[in-house]
Length: 172
Image (tube, rainbow, N blue to C red; front, side):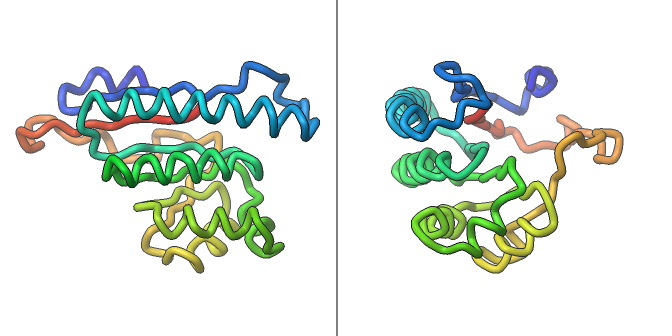
């Protein structure tokens, strides 16, 4: 993200939603629901403050697992309030499993997927399952541990319009 700051046509804001209140491998449900719910509210309030200070073109939201779907829903609704498109980056390979299982998680995830402007999936099975819900033209696969040498060089700032591209990043 620091590299983006080198380009004058991008204004980046970051909303840090990192888990600091538990170890990443602490999966006790009561801690995840109670403490996670409190921190989700904290993150949404922080996001509302950031979003109310400016006009953003897009918000990139990282999604990390089953319970994070409720945080994703909160961001989805908040961004709709501010009329900001959401790119949902599913950072786990369980989307197909969650969607095929049905139930509450699948319904909430489907709701969020249908409202996302674009979805980035971690693997091909997630791509297929997500594409079936929101359309394959709104989904891309971007595996972890990517090599940036495979991507085109950044856009030449001189060829860009005079209007700035303003991006907000939510996640960790």
